[in-house]
Length: 81
Image 1: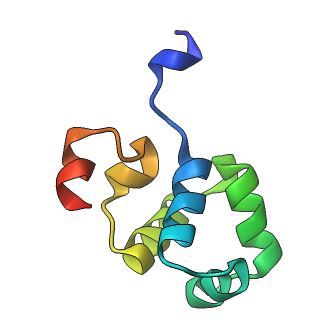
Image 2: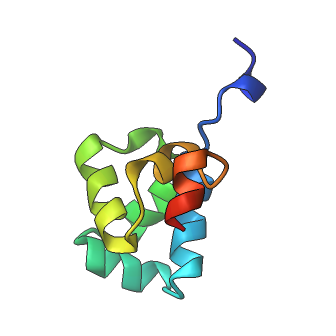
């Protein structure tokens, strides 16, 4: 399946959420209970995220997991943001 058909773009969602929340990497990492280098790694290569990590991100930013997986371009996330 070509990449353009897969709406998975987690790293941009994580970065976007942090910026929208007005947090620095240091602030967000602290609230997530992780190190700043770990958050930087997630924002650059989100393939290392576990389900538990995604749940913490979802809770911190108050968005559904759908947003983290698919970004703002899905019907459910648009209603939540």
